Image 1 (cartoon, rainbow, N blue to C red):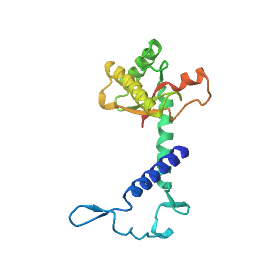
Image 2 (cartoon, rainbow, N blue to C red):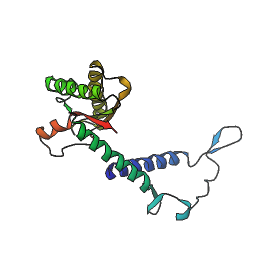
Image 3 (cartoon, rainbow, N blue to C red):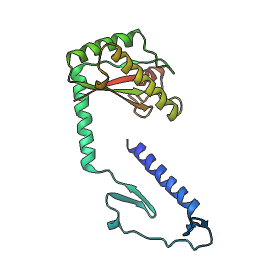
Image 4 (cartoon, one colour):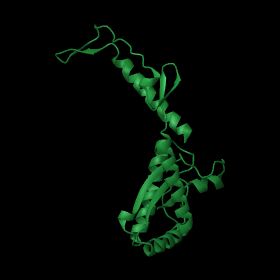
Length: 197
C-alpha cells in the first residue's frame, strides 16, 4: 500500500512539474493572449507551518501525509469486512488465464453464496475483481472489472437484488499470493466476495 501511495504521489508531483515547466515563460494578458516576453513569476518559498498535513521529503519535494484518523478508520472497516466475510463463509470464484468466464466450480460456489445472501436480506456485498501479475496494469484493471461484473451478474441471475451488490476492480494491485508460479497465479485470478457489515 505504501509503495502504491508513493508511486501516486510521485506521479502527481511529476505531472505538476511537467505542467508548470510548459507554462513557466507565459503570462496571460488582459486581452487573453499569451506572451513569453514577461519576466518569470517570483518563486515563493513556503515554511513547514504553511503546509498542514504534508511532509517535506527533501528540498523542493512535498508529499501528502496520511491522516492517522482516516487510516485508523479504514483499517477498522477492513477488519470488520474480513470478520463478516469469514463468518458468512462466502466462497470466491476463480478464473482461467485471460478469462472472465465462470466455470462449473464457480457456478456452484456462487449458487451457495446466493442462497446465503437470500437468507440474509439485509447484507450487502462487494465483489472485488483480481488478476495475476502478468500483463499491464491497465489491461488487468479492465479484466478484473469484467470478472467482478461476471460474478455480480451471475448473482443477480440467481435472485440477489442489484442494489445489494457493488463491483470493484483491483487489477493486479492486491495479490493474494506473491510467488511466481501457476498455482499462485490461479489464486490471484478471482472474484472475491466481501460482506459489507
